[in-house]
View 1 (tube, one colour):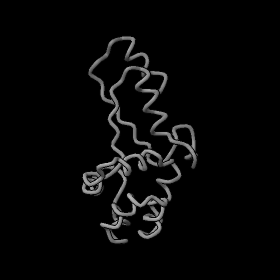
View 2 (cartoon, helix red, strand yellow):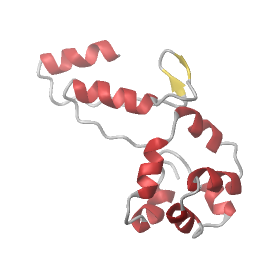
View 3 (tube, helix red, strand yellow):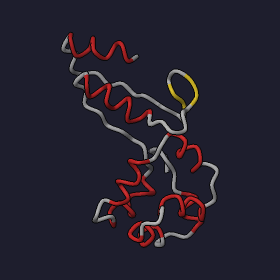
View 4 (tube, one colour):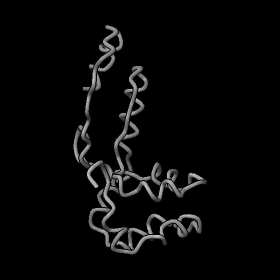
Length: 128
């Protein structure tokens, strides 16, 4: 797949849509817990002059993101590694909250607007 994206740019194919479902897997094997496949793919596509739209977080995050005036939650989301996505699927809400807050009082204030049950129910991806 990555070898073909340059061909589209070289041939000036400008009306293409490619959906990549990372689905907690690397394209060449299992997830590396300390890797960031989404960002790796984004760099590759942008380097080939593609416009990239990432759909990572579900709509359940919208209210929190709207309240995140400093961008601290968005920054924390961008720090997430591939292994973190897997962990979120099994962690209870209180442990997810601890992972998100990570000692930051601004994140604690944002996350405290949700119950542990609500934190556990917020999903990754577009189907929340």
